[in-house]
Length: 88
Image (cartoon, rainbow, N blue to C red; front, side, top):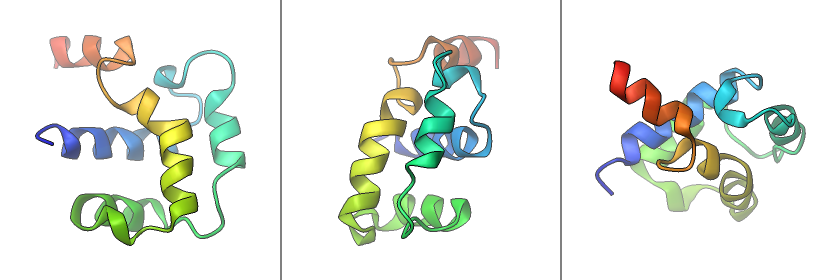
């Protein structure tokens, strides 16, 4: 997936800021962090695993990512990222 490194970078940005506009205005960022599985690696470890061996992550972490983060981090789901790419 050619854009996967960009999506992984966005996941890191979202995890660092639950108030980031890409989460939306309904508190999804805080909810996602509250529901993060205990076995989730540190943000750096998660990024490394997602880039090198996503299948090494526990199924609970992959489900959590799918449920909470991919819809906010992957284009074209969040207009914030689209707007950022046009100005960057």
